[in-house]
Length: 215
Image (cartoon, rainbow, N blue to C red; front, side, top):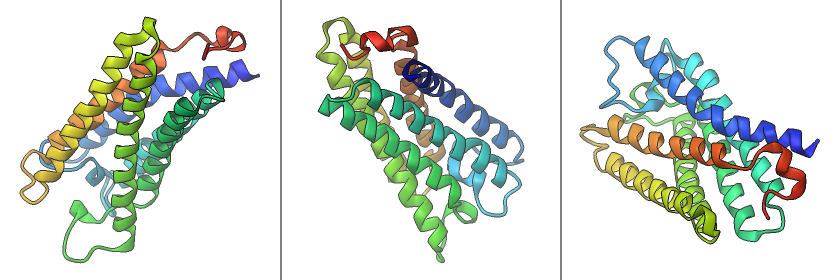
């Protein structure tokens, strides 16, 4: 049973990035005039838009839930190891943040003089999710660097987290002018999503669970 749940979690980790990228691409194509360079991903699910429900319930919510399930499988596999448990919890927090960002959409343009509670919650959830995923990739990188045979994956994990942070800061710095904000957000999300995919795909096979994947 544990091996089955572990397999399900790993599959969620592998599939979530594909679903996330597909939802963004599809919803963007359904919005004439929408710019992936200047507009936020959240604007695809903004209140009242033609792609609101599709982006919220085929993008944000399911991929967030998949991240939580992936984190759960990691927590179970590495149970008893404090740093690994903390890293898994950060990954789960990212998933919860993404779910909340989907449940509480932003207003049109994700900004304006009248910021409603839903948008405040959306912004908070999205920010927590981003920083939790950045933290998760860096902490997992530290853990993997300590294991000689996975030092390369560890270095990649840390580099992904730092790159995701840099792109996120660049996005924030251009928030007022909207110059490249959408592009930087997608680069941050893309780098981190790719890390989730690579990390999940690199984990031991399900049949090795009972022999101790964390050994």
